[in-house]
Image (tube, rainbow, N blue to C red; front, side, top):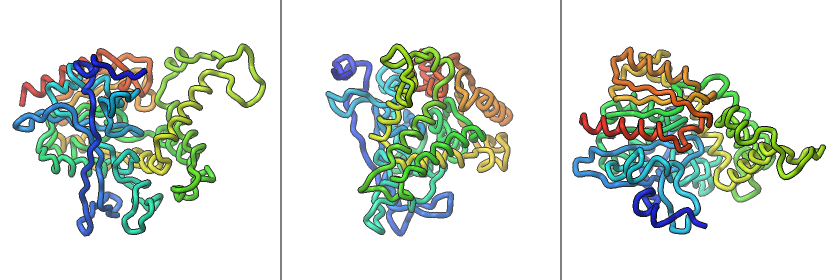
Length: 388
């Protein structure tokens, strides 16, 4: 049965939405990347929800996490079984109220959901880029988003909002284009990856590159590295949860059996869950994109890139009002990392609100319905709007 109902159309969901694209950086005016390489043409896939007001002052830009896309809310068709990835937050009367705000969400470059990435066709060869695609950074992703804003005639953003890698983009926006950003809401994020976070990403990348079907990234049109990508997803998914979430959801319960099988099949429910996550992921995501995007997240270092190694120096370039949110059970980006950025913001005299939300769901808590998070975002955006 479809989750799309008349109730969704009239008040809960934004309803039917359409993916759009914008292409820029046509040669010879290619997009210069932080690596020193260049890229062009570049296509950005994006969606919009709500109505842009006359003076274009109600724009909220939503940035997605590692394996997200531009489809943040609504449905593509009436029989669509699943809405956008943040439909719980974006819509009429929701935390990001589309009756008040014009919401934009784009797929990052390097992705595989409509924006230019390694699975896109290289116009110079007529074949997918593969690993000839240039390495991209969070800064490059934001630079491409800025090009989209210019195309849409948006000169000022009421807010930039995002969690995890989306939160990295929020922070990058705040220091790279401070005059454009009135407010910023980084959720469950960090100014730079810890060694632990880099380690998990590297193990996931090695799982992909060790798959014989990866073929040094040239697998398009042939067998794809599904096994490696599935394992990579399983590794990543463990980091998104928490010990308490795993305990509540699975414990040591067995899957469809009353005793151990004494082989290497599925015994525990958690094993079945992870295998399902891996199998479903390969149906929607490109392995090379996973390599590129995780590397971009690992390279991100707001302190080094914008502050000479200092968080205080980096945030000296910002002027936005901030709402920083962390979650008690997030061990991938623990609360101490959010507190460190809040301290650096306050040392620069920035207006900062901070909240650590008690939640058992781990790093993914910002994607799970949470009344407190919804009310925090709703109240913060109203406050920012009132002061413009």
